[in-house]
Amino acid sequence: MTRRVLALTLIPATFALAACGGSKDTKSADGKGPITVTANDTECAVTRTEAPAGQIEFSVSNKGTKINEFYVYAEGDRIMGEVENIAPGLTRKFLVEVAEPGKYETACKPGMVGKGIRSPFTVTGASAAAQTDDAKINAATASYARYVASQSDALLTRTTEFVGLVKAGKVDEAKTLYPVARSYWERIEPVAESFGDLDPKIDGREDVVAEGMKFTGYHRLEQDLWVKGLQADSNAIADQLLADVTTIVAQAKEVKFNGLQLANGSKALLDEMATGKITGEEERYSHTDLWDFAANWEGSKGAIAALRPVLEERDAALVASYDKRAAALDALVAKHQKGDGYQLYTELSPIEIRALSDALDAVAEDVSKVAGVVAAK
Image 1 (tube, rainbow, N blue to C red):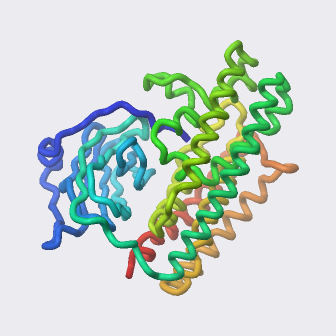
Image 2 (image 1 turned 90 degrees about the vertical axis):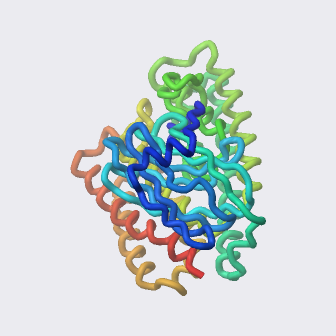
Image 3 (image 1 turned 60 degrees about the vertical axis):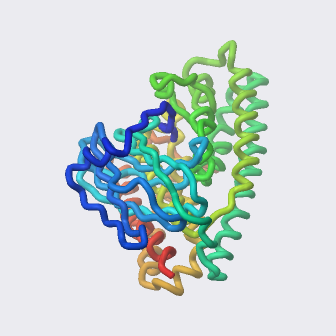
C-alpha cells in the first residue's frame, strides 16, 4: 500500500450527525446495535459516537463518487479495525472488537488517501471480557500469532539483506531481492499497517509527498533502483528503512489477536489486492505487482486457514464455496509464475488482469461473510 497518511481533521459529532441526512440511529436499549455511517466525498456522518466495550458493528454506506474506506483508531493512530474498497453506492457491514473503554476515533477516507475525515468516538463501560472462551477461536488466534511471528522474522532477515545490497551498490542483486523481501510484508500487511505513521514511512508511495511526508521506504528505493539510479541519500534511506522495519516487526510480534481481527485482516488483504495490486500502481517502477498480489493472497489464506475449524463447525456451506473459489484463484496465480517469481505486471494482458480480478471478487464475497460467522456466539 500505502495511502495512510496523517493529518488531523476532527469533525465535531454534532456536525457529523447533522450531515448524515436523517440516517436512523439503530441503538438498542443496551447501547449496542449497528451504527450507521454515511460517507461521501467530503463528509463522514456517524450516527452514534459511543458504544459499550466489546463487539461494535458499523454499517458504512458510500454515497459519494470515490471509493471509500472506514477506520476505527485507538490512541497513536493504532488501527483497531478497517473496511476498505467501498465502491460508490455500496454499503458494507463491519464488526470490530474494542475491549477497552476510552477515547477512539472513526475516519472515512474518500479516495483512499490522507488521514481521512475523523470524528471522536468513545467506548464506554468496563473492559469487555475476552471475546470468547471458544477453544477453536483461541486456537485460531494462537496459530495466526505464530504465523505473523514467522513472517515478521523473515521480513527482517530479507530486508536486512536487501539494505546491505543497496548500500553495497549491488543494483542487480538488490532488484532481485526487492520483491522477495516485500512478500513477507505483504503477507501480514494489515498487522504491519496498524502502527501509526510507520506504515507510510516504510511502504508509502511517492504520493505521500503531496500529503506532507518525505518519500522514504521500500518504494523510494524501488524508484532509485529502477528509475533514477542510487542517489546521494540512498544509503540513509536504506538505513532508515531497516530501522523502521525493525521497530514494526517487534511491535507486530506483540499483538494479541481476536477472531474478528483474523476475519477482517483476511478481507483487508483481498481489498488491498483489488485496489492496489490488480491495478499495477503499487510497484509502479519495478512492475513486480504480482509478487505482492500472490503474497497478499497467501496472507489472506493464512488467516482463513487458522479460522477453518471454527468455520467448518459453524458454516460448512461457506467453507465449501470458499474452497472452490480459492482453488480457482490459486490456479490463476500459478499460471503467472515465472521461475522463482512471477511475471511482471506489464506482461499481463487486459484479459488476464480481468480474470484475476473476477476470481478475486468471487473469493472476497465469501470472505466478507467470515466476520459475521466468527462474531456469532
